[in-house]
Amino acid sequence: MQYRLLGPEKISISVIGLGTWAIGGGDWKFGWGDQDESQAIAAIVRAVELGINWIDTAAIYGEGRSEVLVAKAMKAIPAANRPLLATKCGRVALGNGEIGKCLRRESVIAECEASLKRLNVDCIDLYQMHWPEPDEEIEEGWQTLVELKQQGKVRHIGVSNHSVSQMKRLQAIHPITSLQPPYSMIARDIENEILPFCEQQQIGVICYSPMGKGLLTGSFTAERAASLGEKDHRSRDPRFHSPQLEINLAFVDTLRRLASSLNWSVSDVAIAWTLRHSALTAAIVGARSPQQIEQTATAGDRVLNAESLKIIADAITTRDQQLAEIGGAAKPRV
Ligand SMILES: NC(=O)c1ccc[n+]([C@@H]2O[C@H](COP(=O)([O-])OP(=O)(O)OC[C@H]3O[C@@H](n4cnc5c(N)ncnc54)[C@H](OP(=O)(O)O)[C@@H]3O)[C@@H](O)[C@H]2O)c1
Image (cartoon, rainbow, N blue to C red; front, side):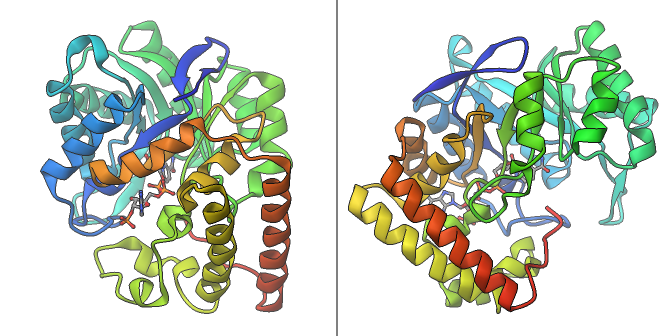
């Protein structure tokens, strides 16, 4: 497993972080279907054994369930080996199945206290603003994160899903340790402005959904996508539905051939492709079982050569053309 330095504080983190959105289960608006609790805990423990030294979670994942499972896994890991814990605020369960967006001071403080309790820690290693919403509250939210840092309740503070102009507004208040944006071969919006800005400002970049929520693992077929249940939010994601799905599956076929020629997995190719970018510090990789993280943590030692990068670039161009022919890709919300 390779390690890189995150943000201005130069925190040493593994290039693969474990993402715990999916283990929040299926009983909430953005669920991933039913999740076995012991498998989730075993996935976290295995990730740490494989050299992963940080876990990403959020208060809203499973409306608190993901953080509770992270805390349970920590009990099974010797104190000296415990990973850094990153969590997020700003998305609030309203109690009726809906999710509110709030960055007001009292709300962020209450969220932080609840996360500290669920995670069973005195201090959160990285506390992130989950979304820059509502836009008019981001300064108040950021100022509150600074206050929590000064109080020692959180160690470092970061943002997620923010634009360059929003990051500039926050940098004027306090330096940003990290940005958590979506990034994969099928979600490249951040390449033009956001990645160069972060690199220039020394803001660490820890990207999410590097395997396109599982699409770029090679485990999806048209049949599997059609059978995604109501409790799995991917059943409502246009990338898992015709006409985008056929284009995405053809794209994955190219990755499969490349992976096979390298003797890698398709996920290795997908994750290593994100990590090739000089602005990237690490990729957050979701896993629902120890087997899944065993198969994807290997990407932490993979480097794509120029020939492979060219094959991927050509496949991306073909996919972009095919998407343009069907009128462009409707974007998912997360
Ligand atoms: N800040 C934000 O707004 C935001 C948004 C999204 C994600 N995130 C963070 O980033 C993390 C990663 O993103 P993600 O979970 O969306 O997507 P991802 O890492 O691209 O995909 C993860 C999913 O791929 C499937 N998978 C994993 N390993 C596999 C393997 N070896 N073989 C086959 N399938 C495999 C699993 O789902 P199945 O087995 O169900 O197919 C898993 O849940 C999240 O957990 C979360 O911590 C943050």
